[in-house]
Length: 538
Image 1 (cartoon, rainbow, N blue to C red):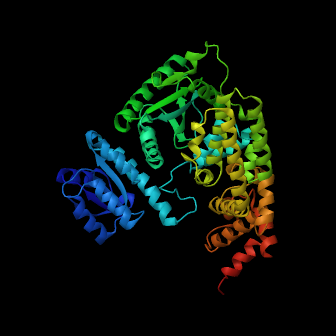
Image 2: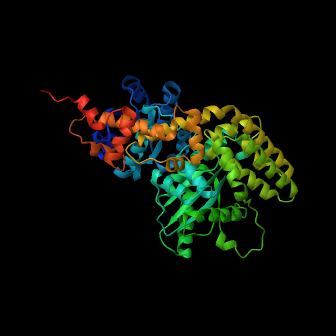
Image 3: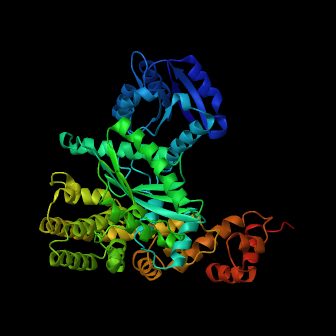
């Protein structure tokens, strides 16, 4: 059971939170309550709760100060959920800086919102408890999830075939049965950013992005994910095939969301919105539209729809990455630095041949930047390291004003990536094999194939097969067989289970085939093995 501490200076709020959920069914016990931050700090030292729900404004020591001291003194735990009022959102911005899990507005607090917030916290706690390699780094929540990487592939049409798309959808439990889809390209614009340090800008944008995520889904079905610390993408799911109604709904949802963002963070969001499409495979085309009209957005017209611009005689200002799709994907996913170096050089030469196409050069550089952040393990960290001595870091791309400067940035990006990936190549490949082995063990009851497993990890079947042979102790199929037989032997400890039941449990096509495989590995048939471990008493 996880321990929960409730901190609020209003007794009725404490009672309300206690009675709002069935805490025991969630695996949580309420260890104590406190009326202020100072008392809470003493209780945290005494009881070591994993979760704290705290009001942000309290006497003696407020919730913000409590969060700050706990992060400095105890590190990652406890995790905080903050209670606030609308007028206290200036404090919320600071609380988000300390990576609180969530914040809830008191007057809107109900069992559903509280349970959703608690479950989000429990997910993080379970990851911490398991100490899994994929645990999100709470200090750098940039493109860590498989879902984000899936949608990046969708945006840039990087799926090799429909089968790879289908398998990943199934594994990630994603639904693409909607009437249509629209992609939007967005960026935060802060008129005061020149007076802020780079770190403060990052914290500001990350906090604002978190709020956009939480608010927008209340108005429309959508999926939102960051491209870098300033830019992000939204994919809207459409319930009806009516362009006018859909555009009106999107405009209304964005207006309400962006109004709140501007009120609490004093930043503006610029947004370009593409045309609707009826297939997920056409989302990349909608995104091309969105990037193109995004260049028309400004502080006076913050949201621009492609439909509103399609009569304007302008040239395409976006860079078509499709020509280099296979090489870029191979380079990033296989750490193939020869392919990356060659491809980056070709793109730089293309920029150089068109010195007047500044916007296309920036667009192309940024899109490859987004892919690197998304597709590479610790991508944002790698890219930040390459440009750590540059004012503004990798975001210095937005400061350049001509094609030659963009090319210089791009070649620095190329050289830095190749250098880092050459060093990490072996450990990365070992990590892929380790991750696939873990995936196999977690899905051992299913029928596993090389093609489906490769699709889950977004790599080619041939590359996965080569990796297993070179970096694993045995081949891919052999490893699956070994793990299935290992699981079968565990199941056979139950004398009531029949051979055909075990075969079905482990995804074998038939009991006969299972028996054949088992005997090949163990030297005896399943029935004989069962008799050996469960001898009949005379």
